[in-house]
Length: 359
Ligand SMILES: NC(=O)c1ccc[n+]([C@@H]2O[C@H](COP(=O)([O-])OP(=O)(O)OC[C@H]3O[C@@H](n4cnc5c(N)ncnc54)[C@H](O)[C@@H]3O)[C@@H](O)[C@H]2O)c1
Image (cartoon, rainbow, N blue to C red; front, top):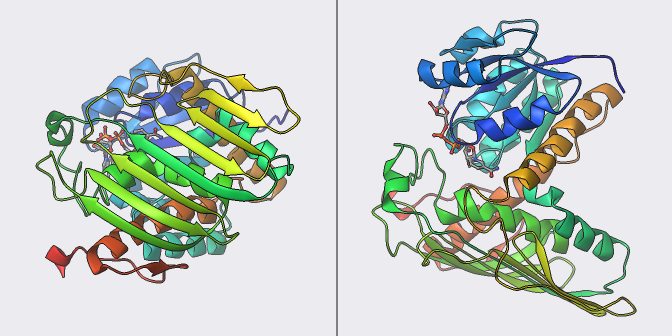
């Protein structure tokens, strides 16, 4: 175990911040030294909750002031999705390593510029995508990578987490193109878009459709896409926040020697040649709705944040680095691009699409 203690500064003291704080508290060589939020009260509340024998973390409302501290080694960005790259760039230029929640940012051009800035400044860029850390998905990923499933034929991902209009009205950035970067796909279903490309590989072609059925927002609350992967496998994914509540999230992988279905964090079907057949209880995936699955989420964050610290010490890239985190954003932007243009999108996507209303 390394003796180096990493000081953390956290920008954004909203909904996701306590999960990151719980994770950091479990990492022996990590200490939160400061919080920053535009709303001082939110940062101050979190700081008092995170008080330890080392004291109460300091509170800032201007992240540039926080970045001037030399006892901060790692900055976590937990703010509105559409400002992640801007804040991360300032932190990288101040010599801080970075951990950014999903999405790493909402525009490819900004993500690419950030990756380049981090390279130039010699700092690590890591992102958190907690579903990759859940045991059921790790087990499936290992079976695919070991070749136990044979050739991949089809991969499907469904994440339909209901959100109320009050949710969208609870903060001005939610449900906006500029600051949320999109709707059901960019905020919620990104978890399973990331999962699908992690399991199935890079995309080749995609056709997508979006709709806004049930909310007064400028972005989509319903989306569907058909996708062809570089390895020839096909797939589909659907994301929604308008579907009546209670739907478990679901991943299906169909391959030469097996079918695996996972709902939430539970294996519903493990039917792999030469391995015992497993059938779980369908429909109860415990991470299907907000507020549940928190322990798994914290465990996964511990693993992913620890990996960034190890990457700093070992001089390597984090496992979920900027390019890895970019993949889901590229696919989501391709869905928007396809929906607005009516075209099939061929990867790599070379430019950020613009909603017709903003052209
Ligand atoms: N991994 C997950 O499961 C998960 C879950 C929820 C949210 N998120 C992500 O976390 C991010 C934040 O989401 P949230 O639900 O916590 O939002 P939130 O609105 O509850 O919190 C965001 C906070 O950022 C602060 N902020 C914005 N700009 C700032 C600035 N310039 N300086 C200081 N503070 C600033 C806001 O005041 C706000 O308190 C989003 O990108 C979201 O996609 C991830």
